[in-house]
Image (cartoon, rainbow, N blue to C red; front, side, top):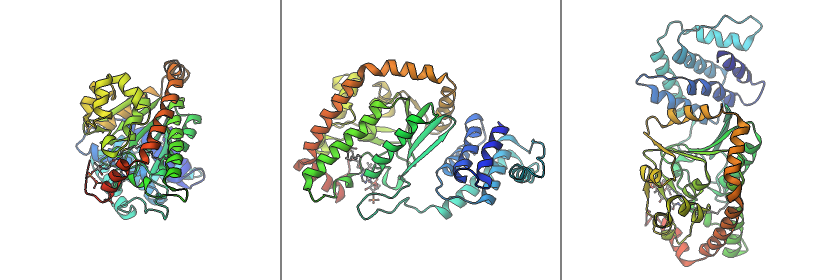
Length: 395
Ligand SMILES: CCCCCCCCCCC/C=C/C(=O)SCCNC(=O)CCNC(=O)[C@H](O)C(C)(C)COP(=O)(O)OP(=O)(O)OC[C@H]1O[C@@H](n2cnc3c(N)ncnc32)[C@H](O)[C@@H]1OP(=O)(O)O
């Protein structure tokens, strides 16, 4: 493992290959996933590790060396590697940083790591991750995509807006899925940053009307939505959702197209389509009745009943529920173990499970998008969006 860490870290210290920050994540995650740190500050420590993964700015080599040294000390104790040769500049710098911590106790190193990350995060991250651009879409950064240890992770990263999905994010998710279908990952994970998994479609997506008027907007959205859902129907590898908090709207419906859905016990599942003057999408009009029976599906999709994580698990929408405090540790350990399975066997099993229903799903998707195109032009939908925007009503 140490060799792997050093090999990966070679990529960041002097920025020779790839993004230094990305490589910092790469060196942190394998150990994070592979170890059990049972002290009181473990949750904070794990949260700090996740925070580092989401940093957009490179903190510089000095900080990265400090983080590296504290990480190693916190997880392995005092430096146990042979001193690298003088010409091995990168590993020498890392060895020096780690050795300089002497016999600092693991717990103190962990606390120092958390403190350092929290001071750097406070200094470098704006309270709101992105400012709206002139056309109402968000600038980049609302979606974070990482690929490590044969797992590609797509993270909704717009916590100030409860991870509501902007038009740009839909596009970026499609691009990320396209890339993930070709990379060396075995699994693709969707998750959220902050207290929400995702609050669904950004309701302001409906407000910029093009010169062709609402009809053109509805037509374009229907085409784009169909394409978006098609990506999930056709995705060739296992899709996993790590539902870290409440999920609303389209972030819930597409779960019917996932292979595994692991949820925090804080998560809820809400599809308030009727109050919004909308109708179901993401193939849920087909997948939900199939998995939970028509009447339970009707309660959710027609009458907007919000399910707890336990209820969603009982209905087959969620694979397993975890206490919020252990979700990350338990899920990522399990997923990492799954990536060790023979990848071709995993693919073949999935394909034989999926192939029979694919054509049907495409037909359902087309039908749902056409129904939505008409709904978007309705008075009911327009009033619901206006109500939300004027903050008179919360769902
Ligand atoms: C390439 C493809 C393009 C296709 C584009 C077409 C679109 C396809 C659409 C598919 C059909 C639609 C599917 C859906 O997802 S319907 C469900 C939509 N979601 C909602 O209705 C949720 C609305 N939000 C809420 O009810 C509450 O905000 C919520 C319960 C989620 C949280 O409440 P809380 O009180 O805890 O927090 P706030 O309300 O104060 O929220 C904090 C800020 O976040 C903003 N926010 C939250 N959710 C959304 C959202 N969905 N859209 C826009 N903004 C959202 C909220 O306004 C607050 O912002 P401010 O702090 O600025 O006020």
